[in-house]
Length: 204
Length: 204
DNA sequence: GCGATTTCCTACTATCTGGTAGAAATTCAA
DNA sequence: TTGAATTTCTACCAGATAGTAGGAAATCGC
Image (tube, rainbow over all chains, first blue to last red):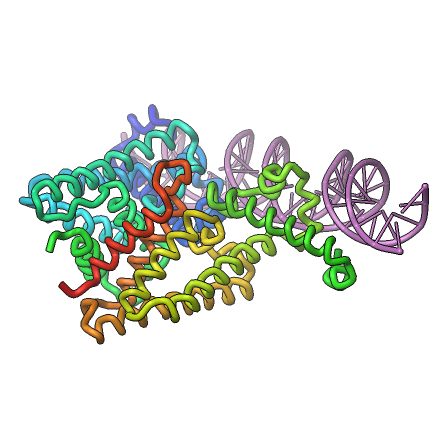
């Protein structure tokens, strides 16, 4: 169905279609997280859904479009986290701790955060630039919080760039080892990482 | 040249051959680190060396053998680090700090540590099991140090498993962002990460 | 200097995978 | 109930890449 036809489809059909797209993205996330983008075939994704790969082209233009939609979703999650943290947390330190926990949550309890750990080199150049820009905005927020925390005296005056790379590394690496059946609760992991990383930065 | 023939080759030819193998592994490390194993072709690796891919088969049985040798080298580095840390550092805290710095070093100043960040799913099953076992040994050493440090009262009693996942994530993620030309010295990065991570664990 | 050995080449094969065309099956909506 | 629309299918194509065969070029070692 073209986007023009989508305009004329009934609400029911549009909802059904949107649900199928989410299912495809979820199957893609799970498979790419498991074995990487290039080693993931369209056959793999389709098989998780019990359909043939040709069917995927009814919902997405190509493989790159699937990957791109996964990345867009993860950026949308980051934007929601940032927006909420602006009102929920009184200090830079608290805001940073909140964002660490939330970032862990989207890496563990849902899969929508997983693309934050994916390489973007597989994306087409325009799309890659857009996704990298979105990640850079999030990273800039984190760096600003580290710097502001140091200004306020609640965090140590460390290099924000290096500190944030360390924080993002600790969290994004979750995609490589975390097993939802592995006995560790996402929220507990978020608390543990917030504890480790915030205490690593705090003034004592 | 088969391994039997290698037994009969002169020392000069054997040294020349060993050097070429190291060059191939280095080219492979650089390319896989840049774009991932599956997106790396034998043509890519050969091109870095100014030869054709068919030549690679003179030194390695297949692509999997190249990847495997890269992983073996990174494990050898870990073993050297562990062995040295047993004599150079008086306390669990110091040993942990030393291993963090060294791990950062092999991720930044050489490329031999890079396979620690590579997915192992691309390896054949037997080889994958061997590499995972080697990584698990290193991980167990780190966990023991966190536990022992807590016993001695110099580190907080956190969950060693989660703490070590956080540490490894922060360090292995370096393969994803670190640029040798990027203005950050490997040793400085090692100090920054040891500082962040050890202070995150220390009793105050 | 030259036969043996090593190293690298060109040309090719086999397989895999992204993607497409057209048709069949299913669902929709009146 | 039925024609239209949607969804999924089978069968296929084109290009990419791992890997191989056999030969050319370079190096070795006596």
